[in-house]
Image (cartoon, rainbow, N blue to C red; front, side, top):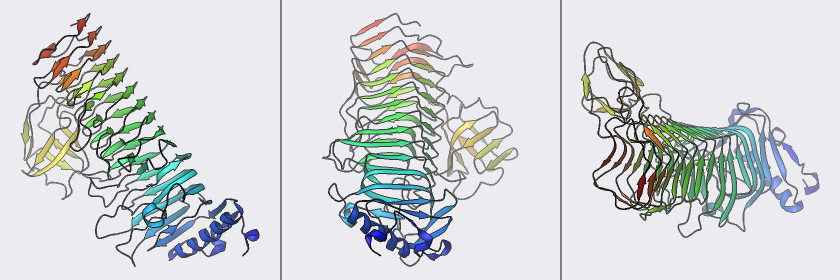
Length: 541
């Protein structure tokens, strides 16, 4: 076939793909991609592979992708690519790949002018003896002018959408579920959507919008600087995305000015939003803006921020019902330990979290806490409890004691121990029922070894105290705390103090003015280390 006769759109069925769910279509797809790729290289006109409805098996070897070749199906559930590796059990099999390590991808050898749209990737049949980070759904690097749209990617062994260095690219409408299936929990990759960044230099123009990532082994969505010496890139936006039941919801591991707007981050196992040194280069993000998001009911923290030089801003978010802190400033070992400068929390609703609404366990310089409503936190107020025998029942995600009378969410975030050595985390409770977190993202039970027998004994620890609206347990220099309403309207009041400066803190300079600190459980303020200098005035309570 000459270049002149290679169509701009080729029907996969007419080029040997069976789509019957059993025949290996990988070789035929590779031949078609090469045919169209050669034509694009010859005449510069992008081509499209159209794949009608069917189940197309890609077995034992990934398809090496070519520049200018798009892949378009008939819709989610209609066109499905099934990934398998029975003949190559140690080989990862993404649908399409093009990488620096395997294929010499780089700024001068990149893919361009691609659309991947309207199909499903089922990775449930890929098995490797050990976790393999390349066992993705899609795994391409150095891509320009691409659009990934309306894809359903699920049950891959590693990251579902694992594409790096995306320039002038849009990722939209992806549903990514239960990916990172073989990730032990803290390995590389294993996410729903994972994007390596920095390869194009200081600006990477990428939009991730209207995507849903649920039940993935590590992150719902993450951005990770790939070389420590690279400049953290600007230009990345995340809008209207939903992340739920992942280890982390959305993570910034090395971007500059990441913009996250209108997203939902709920029910994630460690944190809804995370900035830290967990990435491969141990570089945290900086300069980001998170606004208009719902960060609710995460098993541990709502927002966890650390290993960043700053600045970072959180404005107009709802951060509520999380199992530990609403906002937690901290540093992980191995990353940047310098004080973060110009961290801003403004006009957020920080309510009903288990312990402190805002907890500062790492140094800050010139932070600003402006106009926040920090209310009714410290919900983990219930005393120690135990029970067994009649009236005690266990379910896949629950524990019931008909003889209990617990305060609502009084055990929020606690670790319940059953039969002496089996544990689960409480995400909610009524007077008699504990709701439990799955033992890992994507699981349908809290008990990997099976539901405990009826009547099995349980224990719940006591509540820690005190629990405050804003707690400083690290050096805080020149803070601006203005116009906040930090109080508790509950019955009983579980937020003991509006502001607690612990003995580990050094609070120096700055201004604390115009705040409402009244109506907390014990007192407006508690100073185990007295503040040094600064101006304190017009604070009610």
